[in-house]
Image 1 (cartoon, protein in one colour):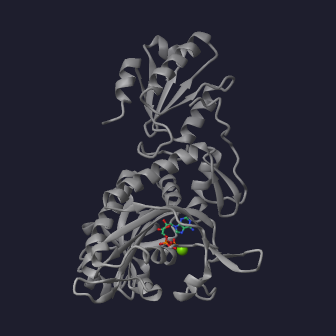
Image 2 (cartoon, rainbow, N blue to C red; image 1 turned 180 degrees about the vertical axis):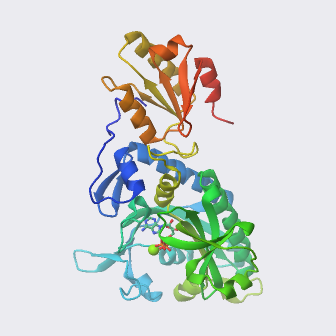
Image 3 (cartoon, rainbow, N blue to C red; image 1 turned 60 degrees about the vertical axis):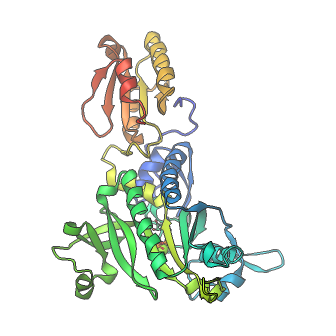
Length: 417
Ligand code: ATP
Ligand code: MG
């Protein structure tokens, strides 16, 4: 893509009420637009990143047998009354609305109820189980605090998967698979080395739930990391009993972290309330045993920014970057610009390239923008680089680049099979 055609522009200023690093850098880079506190739109660069993250998640969910759907934001209160989750005293984050005839509706903050209800139409026998279903869909939550940029918003896309099993044993088999899939997702997103499987409080059907917590100084959660076992415990359940329970030896280090994902055993809480049952091989009727598995792609995107950025701007891992290469044409020399255009055309046949072809922008400004946008490779074409034999290639996270020929560049940036 030619940067001269991109409708967004980088900014030096951020909204004065913005305190988080992720929102500051993403707004300045033109990835997102702040509509109001806790509500952000995704602009072309931001959407490219979000889509890459969603695709990593989608591939891993498909790999464990998840089937993708999209459910509705508008919700019928009747379903939620059956599970005792309509009442504002019980659930204080509801956004509610009304039909013209005054009938109340809700804007979903999660989807256990509607999916359990859908599945009643399709699950009746042990032969129909196990199944898992997921979506990427907008959730609405009337969060009290909205100071963490895109990591905690009032409207956000969530990947939520729900599993339906015959019994606890079958559920746990899927739960373990989901745990591994989650680990892969965070590794592929470039924050695996900072992300810990974390024991957190469970519900009536299991002692613990599991969170995936990424260590960053701006995280809202406190966890205790046990490096020896590559595991952590959330402060909310961190007691000597729990440590003994998990037979974890070694040190625990207190640190701030962000919950990027969460997997939870629901048991029969929703199937009991909404009457989702199946007939066993022997002909008995039993409630379906459920689990839920959430990830916020936007929170993950914000976490990547928080955890990896430096004082010049964002550093995207290659797997989620909006483009692989940022090609910068420097100077006003026509011969250089013509050459840069040719290089752009050959590079973009195989790689995702953002071409800074803007006129009358100084080299300094182009470099600063490249650092802010955080594209993994920067390739600079100038009369000097051409004299030296090609383009100057530098990784975003490295200080110094080197001059390579176009041929070498094409080989270096070839997408791995
Ligand atoms: P938290 O404790 O941070 O409020 P939660 O327990 O409410 O999170 P879940 O309901 O388990 O979160 O949601 C699943 C995932 O959705 C979370 O792990 C997180 O990645 C994401 N998420 C939750 N709330 C928000 C939000 N307000 N904005 C963006 N992403 C969110
Ligand atoms: Mg919450």
